Length: 71
Image (cartoon, rainbow, N blue to C red; front, side):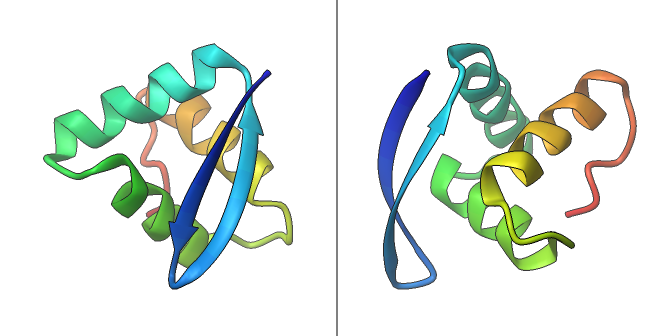
């Protein structure tokens, strides 16, 4: 697990994900021309459940499968 501290929507938070998921998020952000924190903010705004880490993992999985990541 790799933990990162970010400010999302004005709130300081720490997110712990496996390195592969961080790599996937960085690739998604680069393809969209976004900074990583802005991609995470989009995912955070549109997620259904209470768990941001899970929403980030699902977004990376959907992206890898070629599905729309629902952001």
